[in-house]
Image 1 (spheres, helix red, strand yellow):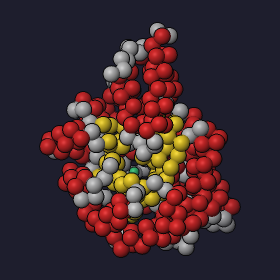
Image 2 (spheres, rainbow, N blue to C red):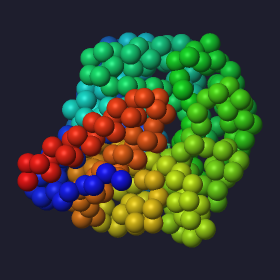
Image 3 (tube, rainbow, N blue to C red):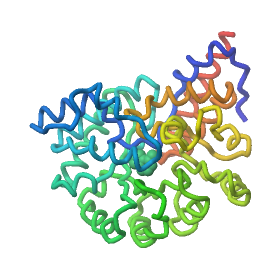
Image 4 (spheres, rainbow, N blue to C red):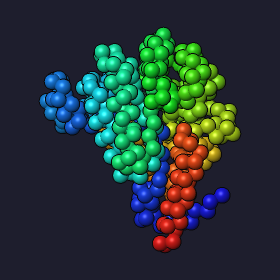
Length: 349
Ligand code: ADE
Ligand code: ZN
């Protein structure tokens, strides 16, 4: 076990920023800032139902997941060309590099785009080209995870997966997102079977707003390798034990949970309790352009609200690296970097 020395509270913010970390739950369409939405609308000759950037940003007041999704899908409608997808992802990577993200696994929602007549190749090739350039420009290792929209049918998800297969080598897994309530994981049992058969990684949103039963179903029916969100597990003791015993990673998104009213205030968030219970928790940004913060903002605000310290920082960063789908060789190198980073900080005290 790596020994984390006490970190002076005033040095915690710089440590949180400097430590190498992975981001495992970021919807790339949720990184579209209002400025870029307006720039892309102009470039593509589209008009928006908002007068300007400020008016659009002013509309970002959400009462639950669905109220956010309505705005999020409207924002994504400015994406038409390969270059648009590339520019969106590169803008995210630039921010991620500043937060010392060494590994990013990007969710994307192809059905949002193919339903508007945008080709699957346009979406995947633009995003994939950005992933390659993130490695050369910032040394960020990045891969794509194709998400199915759970408010649509399983038949639509199956057709989407088949349509994406010519680009099978440009994404590493599948996920499940969009409106959770009323759309349990088992609705997608067959398409997840097919994805696993293709050797794809599998993850799913579960227990963001939905009940613990959805987390059980994601584990047992979809056989996921990570749970996205999972914060509702706290209401089910046997589930908490299972998650701890199996060290099933949870990609928790504190600022998202706050903005979508899953918790009333950040100090009510259960991330600290889940860490205490021995769960493999990670911190992520979800849709940073809409929720008021990128990865480091999530760490900073959560640490301040929950009074977390150096040990927690090490654990969360280590969990993010270990729970990623990168090669063991890369994980080993980042764990070494993480230890060096903490050693550097403790020596300065
Ligand atoms: N799509 C984008 N953000 C999402 C979230 N937080 N939950 C479900 N689907 C999403
Ligand atoms: Zn999400």
